[in-house]
Amino acid sequence: METWRLDWVSRIRCGTNPNWGATVRAGLGIFYDLGQGSLGGVTSYFPYSASKNFSAPAPFPLSPDNASPPPFSLEPPVSTMLVADSHLKLPRSYQWNIAVEQSIASNQSLAVTYIGAVGRDLIRSTNLYNPNPDFQFVSLTDNSATSDYHALQLTLKRRLSRGLQGLASYTLSHSIDNASTDAFATYLNTPSTAGSKLDRANSDFDIRNSFTGA
Image (tube, rainbow, N blue to C red):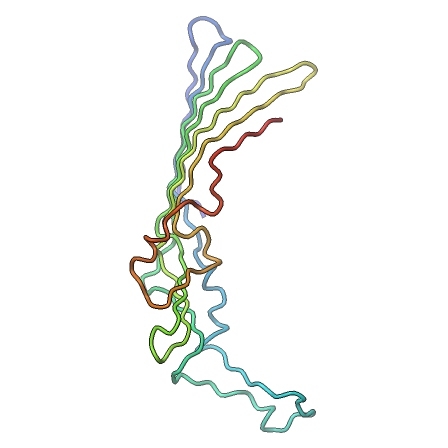
């Protein structure tokens, strides 16, 4: 979900030669996520569900006692529960870029682009084992995740004969976070306020150097 985005383009002619023009592009925006992935299964656990197990082989047809629905209970101990921070907010990212594209003669151009993106209040899941005698397993979702991404891109385009075009692109980038996804949780035996800081490192998908050609 995009909140707003601003783009700016300016073309500059270098001297009197029309084949040596330059283009400057810039843009920035704020983007919001729904932030509900890790809480999608909350209704499958306490206090929204109850189950009844039978030892094999189970008699069939079921007796009235076995066929009756299991009772709901709000009393501890609780085996599994998914909870969210009471002040949970929509995760957001700030993204910006600036690019300078320089024409070289009439058939090729070189572009240099800087791209930045920072994520704040991102969703992070932490699994707590036996936080107290009443709860055996609690999965906590909060906004303790952050991310930072910065990249430098170099792109060379050249028009070849018979309508063909060559393209070469190189990217130097670095992505850092403390939760590369909210689909998998960080596991802790006890709650820890320092956990999110200790996990800050290279992203799972961090690729420092990338080259493509076409």
